Image 1 (spheres, rainbow, N blue to C red):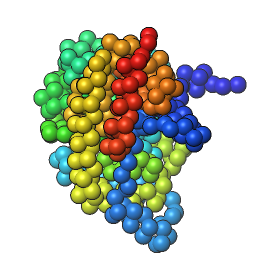
Image 2: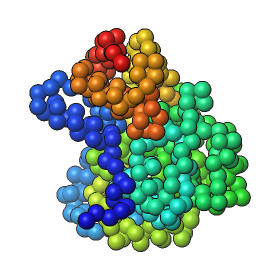
Image 3: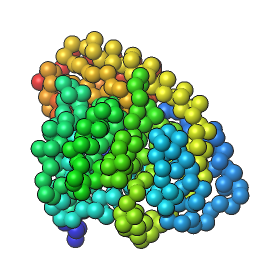
Image 4: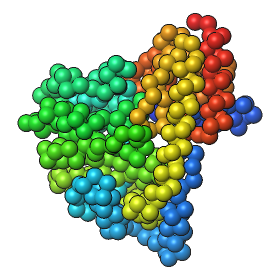
Length: 389
């Protein structure tokens, strides 16, 4: 009954574990969940007020498929202000979150057997969407020694005549790794003279600690012309449930194809959400975002120190995002086994590294309050101390 393509698709591991944790909690279990990448802060007031005003003014009709003119212009203003990037409104498409952006992109560019280079650890959705679109994920392994970042030599060695795209995620989910401008420049040099696109997922751009963020498309004209920038407001503006994402690209044929696809699937994204996004895009929520960022940095520092004090566990302090990618190889290299038993015995929900293409680790989200973080890590410490392989 089912199509072959749908049978290659797996459920998101992070969403599955988060749902399981919620079910256990609803059943009365004392579960602490650090699985979801979901800020615990409220959506900025200015965005809340914008959507209320939109409701009251009757802004509930269809908009153009890519988005209303004012939201497309707001994205252009944001990209110019933050990164010096010059886009026109017809080069922007709003989507139902970054997953929708990626889905549209790979549906539009991949033929059967086309290859997409994906650094690992990777966000769980990347290879799944590539596979569903008929492509082949080409995974490049990284580790602590490389700062969880690929090298130009790795990229060069992975390129074949079938390579269609490279996915770069900076800051990274799950490791928090941030590529510097010079590192992006070096990767860009490898791509010169090819037709390879770069899908640059910059969802955590405003959550970078102690170093600058570099937008991939801003590094060179060559990278600008081959990069599809993917971003949104779920993480940095605490709007995960609003599902606002967008993509920016100067490639007309690609943009036209994606608009056609979206016109036959979702059409425009929620009109009210578009209005809510505008203040955040224009910088009117920056003060609240700065407060969130400072809180995340404080939580990061606390959690890193607590985890590195647990014998058998280790973690590199991330430069961005709100995750720790914790090495459990000394205790248990099978991350699925480790996390399953951690949830069953200690009632702590985390995400196994296997889901991110890099076993022997688990992802711990510190996008929650300090009391819960401290309590959760204490439970993990007890679990590790008593762990039996």
